[in-house]
Amino acid sequence: MKGSTIEYRHAKGRAVREHMKRSAHRQIGDLSRDPLAPLREQAEHYAPRLVALHHGRMAVSPLAFFLGSAALHAHDLSRLPHTGMLVPLCGNAHLLNFCGFVTAGRELAFEVDAFDEAAIGPWEWDVKRLAVSLVLAARQRRLSSRAAEELVLAAVAQYRDRMRQYAQYGAVEMWHETITFDHMIESALAPEARRAIRRALEKGAAGADGRAPGTLVDRTAHGFAWRNAPPTLYRAEHAAPLFASDEGGFEEGADWRSVIEPMWEQYRETLAHDRRALLDQFTLQDLAFQVEVENGASRDFVLLCTDHHDKPLFLQARESHPSAIARYVDAGSPRALPARHDGERVAMAQRLLQATRDVFAGWTASVSQRSFHVREWRDRKLAANVDLFDSMLLESYARLCGWALARAHAKASGEAIEIAAYMGRSDQFPQSLAAYARVYADKAEHDYDVFLAACRSGKLETQSENDVAAGVSRTRAA
Image (tube, rainbow, N blue to C red; front, side, top):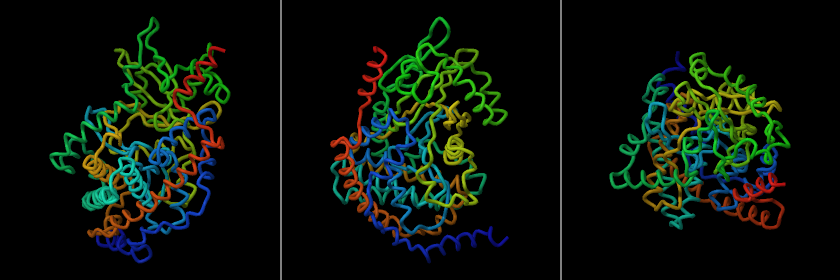
């Protein structure tokens, strides 16, 4: 068929430039809006007692604010012209949402790892979000404006070049494309940067939560149990003050299994037959609540399971909210994620966008019909801590993120040929995104100031992890 030839698809990608020039990506659009309005709408879906914690984390810096304000950026992107080339997006391709973890094959992978905002949308929205976060990271490290521009150019050029590479792949070859972290740094980084970036990312992972899942488990007379580890992990009865009012069954003395077992059965049915057979070899031992370091406003369970050799499996069941991206794109797109609720949407996006296979990715709903996505709770070995990065390390990291994002988009969309043809070989697209990121970062910093003023005046409540932990302790003592 004519529409399936390489030449036709290449011409189709280039033709998009007729209505969306590459230089047009410099546009910022009309940003005369209340920056707090999309954030308030977003917070309506969160666990009420954790909204203040979410605000507290956003108040740390403009970079942290940008991480937590995907709804605001989605609103602004929706008012700009775009390519119309719709693909599955992660929706929050912020530099802090990339990480390295150990796969089931015991290899170290590096990928985008956040899908709460996943939806179908213009591919460049993810790239723009990464670009702005890089500029904000450079400013947090007090790097020059030129250094910030170089970060964006490095990331977007890597995205462009890898997309051109993936445009040469066959469909099955692209679907099975898995590249280890070691291969990525060997291929993308200069020799002097390799050891330094690995060291910095390993330290960043240690600083993110400090402990691997297996270190939070105790053997008891009845099997295994989670250890209460505030301010990030709470046994079910300890977390009741956070959730008891809106999700019963977790009060002290209550049987949490009556809540979880129906969710478990629903989740089990979302797995393929072979994966259900694997899951059935595990016994559910214990449940705890997690207050994530980056995203603290969702109900988040972690499940401890063991097999017949007492080998553990850790699963995360995280509440899923409506995507901040989805409301601004055509829900009737033929490529729309085939989801009946938000938990399914997030799980499907993870399956599509990640190169490494999570055989336990699925979804479920609670007794109160809140939707959850389920996935293996993996040991994060690599994570970014911007405070540890100098300009060389940030540029190296930017290249890795650009590569990982290109791989995700190419695998999930099957449209590497069209996207690569649109960007071309020149630096026009990277330069346009560098210009966009610089100006939008100015606006993000201004929005952060407005947000911070609202927090200080009491219009928005803020809490830290320690505040939440102290509140849990006071409630239990009472």
